[in-house]
Image (tube, rainbow, N blue to C red):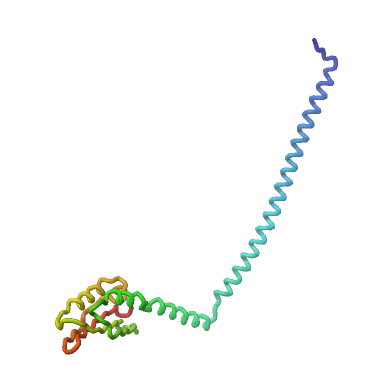
Length: 184
C-alpha cells in the first residue's frame, strides 16, 4: 500500500516538537546535574571548614603544650634520666640462668655478688664456689669458665670472664670474676 503525505507541515511540526522535547530533557538533566554538583560542593565546603576549625584548635593546644614552664622541663629531665638509667640497668635473670645451666656436679656455688656501674666504675659479677673431688683437678672449673665466657646471655654485659683464684687447701674453692664495660 502506498502512503501519500497530504500534510507535510504536520510532519515537520511533529519533528520540531520532538527536537524541542529532547532539548528540554537535556536542559533539565544539565540543570539537575548542576544543582547536584552545587550541593556536593556546599557539603564539602562545610566539612572542610569544620576540619580546618578542628585543626586550628589542635594547633593552638600544641602551641600551648610547646610553651612549657622551666619547672616542667626540669621534671621531664628527671624522667628522661630515670629512663636512661633504666635502659642501662643490668638484667640479671638471663645471667643467673646461664650460670645455673653451666654449673654442674662436682661444682657447687657458694657465693654470688654483683656491682652495677656508677659513673666510670666497672661492672662486676663475682662467682664463688666449691669443688668436690680430687684436689688439683681444675677441669670442671675451667669448663665452667669457658662456658660462661662463650654464653651470649652473660657476654652482653660482662664480656670479660676470668678465673680469679683456685684454693685447694682444705675443701676446693674457686672464684670467677666477670667484668663489664666501664660506664655501661
